[in-house]
Image (cartoon, rainbow, N blue to C red; front, top):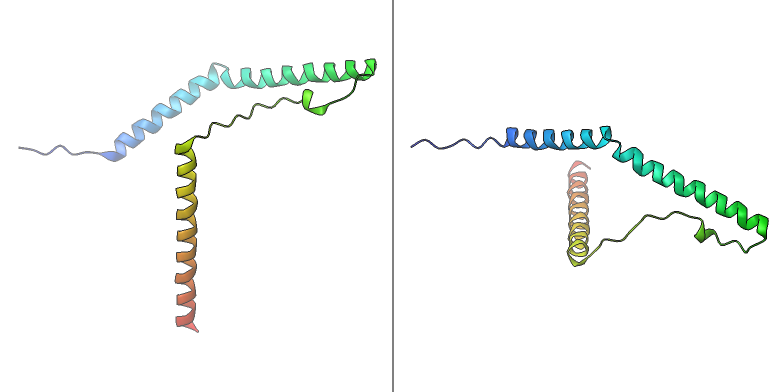
Length: 108
């Protein structure tokens, strides 16, 4: 009975290749340019609205002319992942600093 050799390198390489192909298709199909065009159109419309409000003497509120696409998709899972990541970062940073401090004390 022969054991199958799991070649993780080629699996990872295949996954990266599929990711590359999907991003390339999205770029060539104009998806990114369409999003940029939409933002530009929104900006041009905001400029026209701003100019009309100045001509008409309407009160100016800068928030009504800005295009804000940022959305908060955080939930309990992402908040927990951020919390764990920050604690691991603190632990690793402190541990590395202590190791270097110990090595400094050995040298001096």
